[in-house]
Image (cartoon, rainbow, N blue to C red; front, side):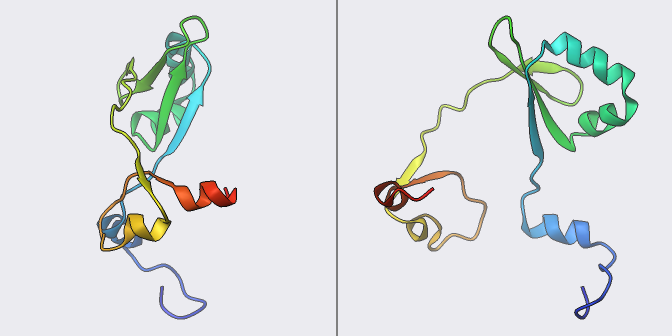
Length: 116
């Protein structure tokens, strides 16, 4: 932006993803994947957002209690990430000296004080 009451500059969305990892809304729907596929076929506006991966869509099957992730063309079984979450004393300990995208961390100071 230029000035306090200006318009956005041309190309701003690309400027944002050059330095930030794009974040997408994760939508978990408790429904069978087949039902969600039928709904997407009837709702072209919603289908466009899902097929172009502007949102992440997950089907949580009521019958099997398993999750399936829409990969842009179809639902595939969700595979749980086996990595462990890093534990740090304070949030500063997690980001100190880092410039790239950081994963999740468990902050123990917040746990001791009861802070969220």
